[in-house]
Length: 73
Image (cartoon, rainbow, N blue to C red; front, side, top):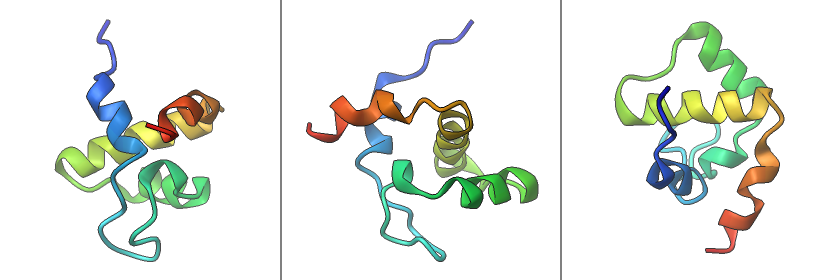
C-alpha cells in the first residue's frame, strides 16, 4: 500500500487553484461540488490533477479536520 506524500499534503493548504471559477482559492478550500464535477468530467493532467483528486477523496470521506493543524504552518 502506498503512503501519502507528506509534502503533497502540505501543498494542499498552500497552493491555490490556478484557473477557473475558484482561481486563487486554496486547494483544500475548494467546494466539494466543484471537486465532484471534476471527478465526473475528469481531473486535469499532472500534479494539479493528482492534488485535486486527493482533495476530492479527503472531502468525500470527511477528513478535512486533519488539515487544521497544517493551516498554521
